[in-house]
Image (cartoon, rainbow, N blue to C red; front, side, top):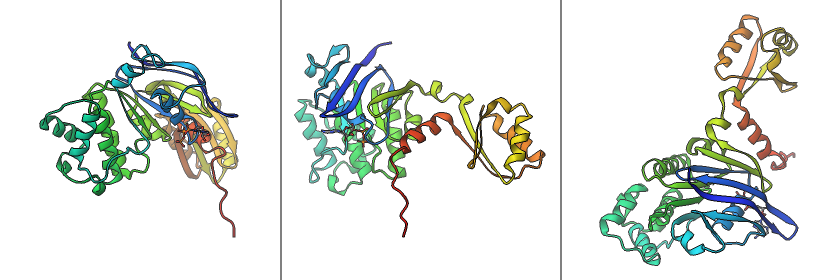
Length: 311
Ligand SMILES: Nc1ncnc2c1ncn2[C@@H]1O[C@H](COP(=O)(O)OP(=O)(O)OP(=O)(O)O)[C@@H](O)[C@H]1O
């Protein structure tokens, strides 16, 4: 396995705030690496360090085996990035935009190659339309075409689905999957949505308050044994007694006003439901989610909500 990005003990402080705290991770060649965390977790700060837009306070970053501090040019030559909303000139067409950015990277492409790039991001039909007529999703995709214009090996995307509608999100997902499957690129993609990252990444890292929480392959992290089921019933004591006297007794993980929580394999959910019904437990709801999803929801909603408005 070839490491494309190797981040070791990376820390960034802004006065008294530690935005990135002793972060270490490795992105392997061919990975779509999901970089996940709530707003303010430190994703953009890490990405900005990776792209040499800001200096780390401490720690080191290696890309393509080079130390970032000493080989900035070599690394950036082989890296494409879209951070936040791409900066595009609204009075240029999609085609002219690519031409301009190619010239800025001293890249010469043929007309067919420009069109191929636009085709790749689903914009060939709109090659001559001005950027100002584009939806946010189209601008994001054009931003990716710009990032690809010098054919980099590594693509870094900071929250590429932010502000997109469901169709725009699906288009972006397909594009990222194509970058990996067809073009064999290595992609680092940040997001605050677990459900999004889960669909495109093969590895992911979850950070909170600048610190690593979990890292691993998506199949490791989404192991089917880790399903959490919440049972809501009109007769909780009877349901609890039934479960305590059944094979599920050791799988009970929580009982409170919200309901009864069990951890089990996904395939067991229908069997459990059948057992409850056969024992005359009237079910108001059975909600199954993956424990990582549950866990991520907890960390992402902690201290983030606004109290409901009361008149
Ligand atoms: N230039 C800066 N000066 C001071 N604090 C900063 C600066 N840039 C980022 N921060 C702080 O660092 C923390 C991490 O911010 P960062 O933008 O990296 O988070 P994020 O995970 O990308 O979140 P978001 O999705 O909201 O952009 C936040 O508390 C932010 O306010």
